[in-house]
Length: 75
Image 1 (cartoon, rainbow, N blue to C red):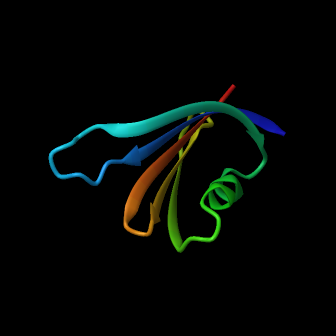
Image 2 (cartoon, rainbow, N blue to C red):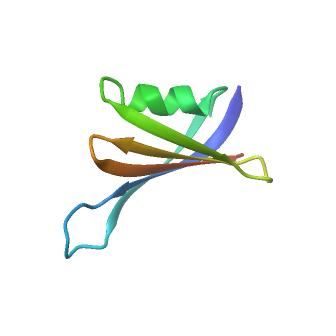
Image 3 (cartoon, rainbow, N blue to C red):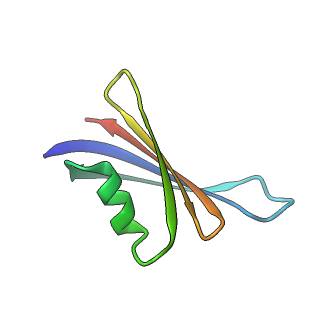
């Protein structure tokens, strides 16, 4: 299984607050998209995937009107 450092950003929907919730963790997965779907299980989500030249993967998720970004960087 591939090891990644995961940065998970959740956009704040409050109009006057530009801060984001940001979480960091180390994970193992062979399928980052499946990992994101499992993390957001039970919700109607739309995913967009961006594969980077360095082997990293960025997945943008729109879930119930909330925009989130998952940045997978290989360890």
